[in-house]
Image 1 (cartoon, rainbow, N blue to C red):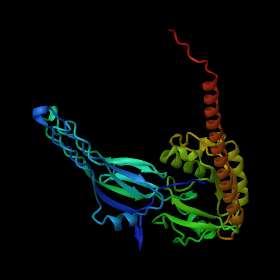
Image 2: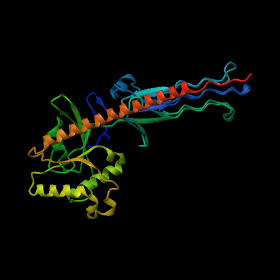
Image 3: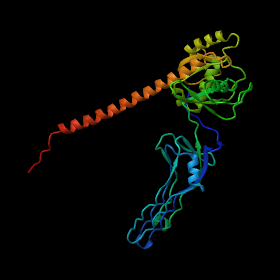
Image 4: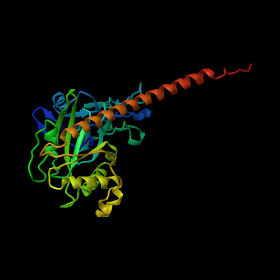
Length: 346
């Protein structure tokens, strides 16, 4: 079970999940040669993540999609150091990846309040520039919504991800008996009896070998995640073993469970370059069959239980951090009160 991933760029009706915008830092102010005055710096352009903001809101409110920092103030007799121009702030949705047109990654804004400077203002005119100001940085950037879900289904083509997604959620992905059926990530919602909703998204990985055992498949999936983003291996993970309706599937499942109990004893079946540096510690291994619905309810219960456990751990961790902060403040206050008064000498 892995959270997060990049979405394909697309637009469905009123849903917009990518934009190209022009950002330009403000020019600096003029210097004052006769008095050595320095002009103000131009304003920067910042992209700031704000809850409740949508891409459509940005497009509707700023149809020109042009964002420019303020002009630095010229140096004058009254103010030899000219004030800086005002910064320009672009509010964007939480969960944004920002890149340049040539694909350079500038950063990601994953939490409310995260901010990133995307264009610097120009320097004000001064002695080194013969008191002439500089223009601000100008470029076109891409704002791409990342596909964010509570749970991610990760597997190789034709493993049954789309079928599983349609079985446990309201999603209706394209399903066929050939690889690479899914041409874009799909998101579905699992609805629980207590009205809890869980977003699930599916991602497929490339084919490495034409045939592999279940154990080798798990290792290659682990390697794919490790190469993509190693911290994903620390996410809570469930292993769903599909197609249990096939002949001899039960024997192969039991063999897989034994191999995963001591994976290092079985890694010799893979080429060294395909062996991951780390192993995923699966919270549970669930045998399922999308074709017969075997184990589907067990899987959805495990997903919910795992998410609830993680939420409870986060609550406990937050409470501990607040308690530590309170103890630290209390200790500082007590130490301050116990300090002896300073003696002064006449």
